[in-house]
Image (tube, rainbow, N blue to C red; front, side, top):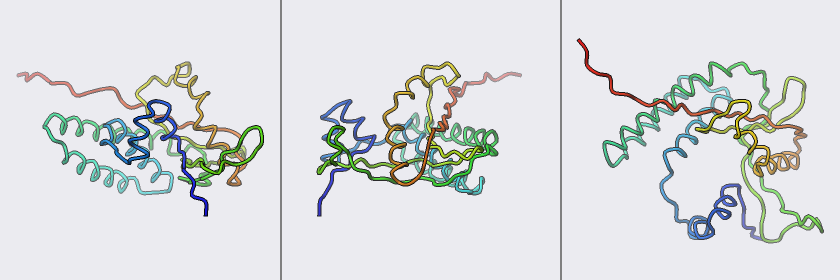
Length: 213
């Protein structure tokens, strides 16, 4: 039985950024603690996933709060603890705004958190690699109001996401979403477009209020 090495979007990005870092993380299995930004993105993504699955809002918030409290409890200094408390407050507010704004968006979710593992084909010979396969997980497949199927991709960012922002220009060249389109089609979903569900993280922060009479 052939044992393939699975390539994911995360591992490919790590390899392109630093081959030594890739070796430590994916060959030796040495990982550092996830950054605050990464933890925030994962937590928000999980809350949105549960919401699209039809989960109860209060239960989702309660789980996120419980997980956040456990994370806050591992802080090694009061400063880090305070930073994480602020992040949890932002998460709850951001999720509340998301549900209020996009609760009735008119999309039918056909599949959620859809895993895939597809062949890597030689572009000239069309032969599949005997060493590598491309693996990952698609956030969702949705049906639009006009009946078309689309890949649904959720992202969180601190960047500007206005209509003319550079963020959207970079997404036009996103290799990850191109792979997801191909994977969805190979899994039998006739997707023809993409829906980006991008949420900008609040940039506000607490301020000290002077004591007044």
